[in-house]
Length: 557
Image (cartoon, rainbow, N blue to C red; front, top):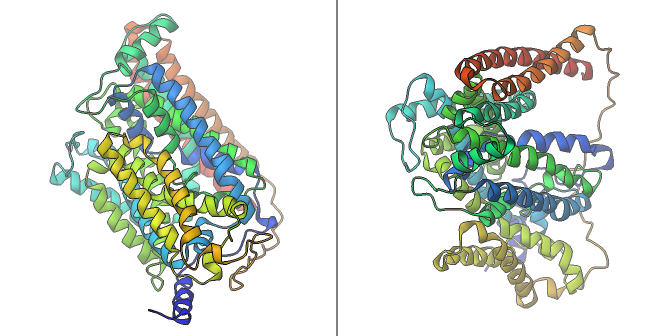
C-alpha cells in the first residue's frame, strides 16, 4: 500500500489540475439581487423548453394536472435553491468543485467532474440537435421521428455536423461576446414562446369565452391521451419532473458557484424568475405550439407558430444555450487535461457534443436524460449537505478528508455507488424514473453518515470542531478589483437605440393578440400578416438592442 507521504504527494499533484477559484469570494465581489433575477430569467428560457413542453403533450397530460403540477413542482425547486443551495454557498463562498475537494478528496472530485463533463456534453448535444431541427427546414431534410434512436439519414448527420461546427467555432473564438449576445436574445426568445402560443390557439378551434378556450386546451392540447408509445403521466409525474429538472444545480449544489457571489441566502428565491417564466410559461406555450405538429420537431413547431422568426429563435436558442453548457464541460474536463490550452479542451468537448447531437435519442428522450442526469449527481449534493450541516450536530469533524490528506473519501464513494445501485434497482419494482431521486437522496445521506461512524480513519477519529475549519490554500488568493473608470456620458443615440428595442418588443407582444382576438374568418390572413411584421420588428429589436448593449459596454470601459 502507498505510504501516507506518497498519498499526500499524489494529492498535491492532483490539486494542481484545478484552475477554479480556490479561495472564498470576498465581500467586495458580491452582487445585487437583480443580477441573479436576470441570470435565472435568461438561462431557463432555452432550446430544450421547446422539447419539454411538447413532450408534456405527448405524455397524455390533462391541462389541470399540468398547471397544478408545474405550480407546485417549480415552487419546490425554488425552495431547494433558497433553502438548500444558497445558504451553504453564502457560508463557504466556494464553488462546489473546491468545496467538494475538502470533503471528498481530490481523487473523487476528479471522478465527479469527468462524469459532470460527459453529462454536460450530452445536454449541449440536445441543444445543437434542436437548432438543427430548424436548419433542416431550409434544406428540406427529413427530421428524425420520436422513436428514432440512431440518425435517420446522412443529410440529418450533415446538418447536425454543420450546426455543431459553427457552435464549437463560436465557443472557441468569442465566448464573452456570445454570452453578451445571449443576454440580448433572452427577452426576445421569451416573447417568441408567448407569441407562438397566443397566435396558435385560434388554429386549434373557434372560441368565444374562457370556458370554450379551456375546453380547447383540454381536448386539442392536453387531452389526456399519450402518443407514440409514451407512458401516460399525471400530476405527480409533472410535479416531480419540475422539481428535479435542475436537480444537479440546487439539491446537487452545482449552483454554489453562482450563489457564492450573493449578498444573502435569500437571493435563492430569485430562481423563481427562471422557474415561472421558463419552466412554467415557456413549457405551457411550447405545448400549445407542439399540439399542431405531428411528432417532435421544435423547428417545425416554431415555424408554424411564428414564421421565419420562430425558426431563427430555435437556432439562436440552441446555440446560445449550447455554448455556455459546452464551456462548462470544457472547464470540468480541464482537470483531466491540465497541460492543454482552453481552446483545445473546448474543441475536444465540442467534438464529443456534436457527435452526441447526431443521435436523436438524446433529445427525443430528453425527460429521461434529465432524470438520469440529476440522479447521477444528486448523491454528491446529499453528502456535502450532510457534512456541512449535520456533522457538527453528530459530533463528527467536518473536512476530515482534507485534514487527513485523503485522496478518495471512501464513505463518500461507497455512498454514491450504493445510491446509484438503489435507484437503478427501483426500476425492477416499477418505481417511475421521476420518483427515484427523493428516496435516493435519503439513502445517500444515511449511508454516508453511517459509514463515517464505522469506517477506519474517518471523522470519528478526530475531535468535533468548535467552529468550521478555516484553512485555505494560500496559492490562489482573491484578486482585488482595479479602480473602475469613471463612466462617460450617454449620448442621445444610445438611448434612441434602447428605446427602439423596447418599442419593438412591445409591438412583438401585441401582434399575436391581434390574431387571437381577430375575426376567425380572417385567421389565415391575420396569421400571415402577424408573422411578417413579427419578423420585421424582431430585426428592429436586434439592431437596437445590440447597439444599446455596445454603447453601454463602451461607457463601462
